Image 1 (cartoon, rainbow, N blue to C red):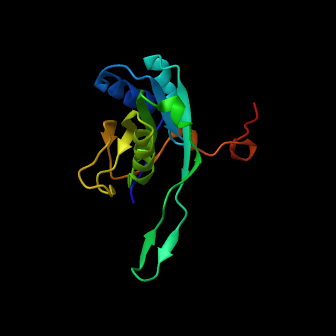
Image 2: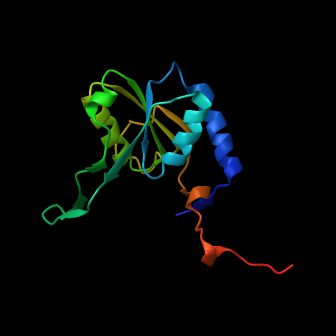
Length: 165
């Protein structure tokens, strides 16, 4: 699989491409951890969205031996109370829509709370999408590559090159 490593400038350009797409205001934002936290924060600041929530979702792997394929139900490790979402227009943010499982699970749970969820990602991969014609409501770019964002770069003292001056 092709890999694409982005810079902070690349991310700024993606955010700038997204901003004119939004129609109307949002009452709150729900950022999917961990990938949606940084772009969500950037969008929240640019759009002056004050009510910010996070959702953590896990898809534990379970193999269906009869059908020979991977099966999993989402586990919501963290999710705002329905009362905080009910009746609001919610922007659900993640970094990428690959298979679409995570953001679709979050979107559906937000909808069940009585809210209007709209999805937003920096990158949409239509080639991995498991949901047919479904796609994000807002996205900055399409790709078939594995995207490495600047916040995913390894950090820490063991990754810093020390130079003598």
